[in-house]
Image (tube, rainbow, N blue to C red; front, side, top):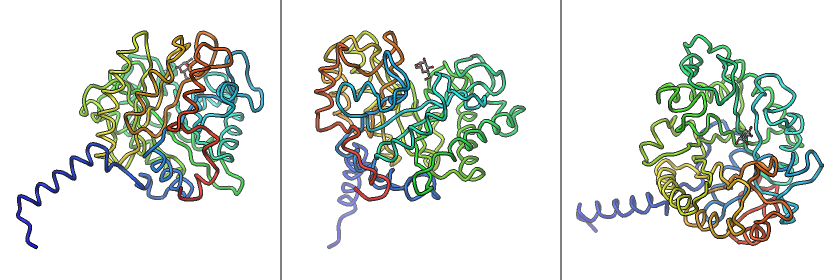
Length: 374
Ligand code: BMA
């Protein structure tokens, strides 16, 4: 049957609309690394499947410490409140570059290696951030102004110093081995919040071209020179108002697997909800157009003073959009925590949040997430 040109155009336009609206968004797309290990490919594929209907709950440093305790085997504030661990665990690599035994928050790297193995063996997922010191000035990740990015990309006068940092990263990652000697897949989220100006890699410290060159060199070097093929790469912005803002520093589809943003609640819940909706709407569109997995890569409400924050604010926001996971930040002390602990004002509501069928904590994940199609 000969279809008129007009009918064909209408069909394509309809498909495109559906796809852009996230209805036909990425499913079973391989990782950007063509040489990714089979466990890495399986994890990424299964995360895409889970993201069609669910959100994995994550917590930074969950097994290392909590409010009022540290380094007690098996302990976790999330588990103390819900009886279950998070499904995703964030770990910080800052100071790995200094050959320090502990990260910049005091967590021993040998502990992080054992947490990553423990999590892998029960089907949890680990994610790394890296607030590394400025390779030129030796100051912290938060040191600005600086021209460091220009100086450490290929051709820069401190490029070798950056390469040394990446070599140390590779030595660390090569210790992440499963029981059969396989490399444990991890999400690696470098140079995050780059649309903000507070890190030495931020948008006030380098041009988009320099940022993209930094990112591409790093990923190519880790894949091709260091032969790391267990990294699921996360691209994680701070604020942005448009798709162009979000993509201005995007390194390209072959360098990214997960796209996300970091958003913390201030005092105003309505503003936070509007902000999340605005950024999620753009993120979902970009994820569908670029076939990437969207995630809320950092979030939280410091000290969670609103007893119903979890079911009144966060859950409605993440339920409207496709997001693979939400990572809440670390439980350092009573003035700086982002997940409840027993007796905390929001603990009862967090249990309701935990019970929502949308959420995935540790008990709903199995080690087969790395070996079998869900
Ligand atoms: C920030 C704070 C800091 C910490 C840094 C890296 O949000 O929690 O105390 O050093 O993250 O983990």
